[in-house]
Image (cartoon, rainbow, N blue to C red; front, side, top):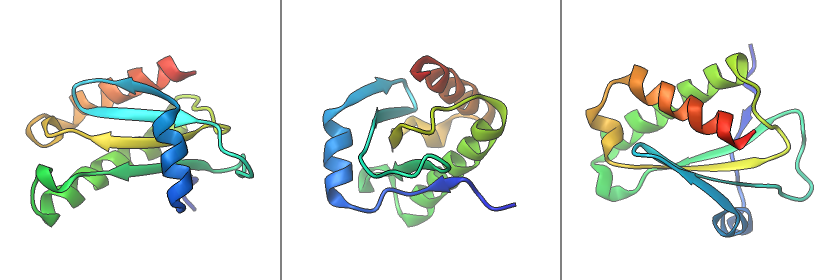
Length: 113
């Protein structure tokens, strides 16, 4: 099945989302807002991992985890598709279990509704 997730692409989109609303927890910071000319059928989301978090292998592991969590979230909880999201990972993502991270992120997306 084709994924319903689409990444942000333009620098202006990132800058606009960084000025909008945000929700934070010990694993991630989620910036969200509405963007112009966005298609409502797909979830517009990007994952950011800073170089401080580790080498490329560790950063890619974090992104894979986040992508997997968001694919499950699209199926299990109702996420607003009219918002665009920017998810910035924190260093605690590597040291904790996937199940705990998933539950915490699900709770944050339920708050956004």
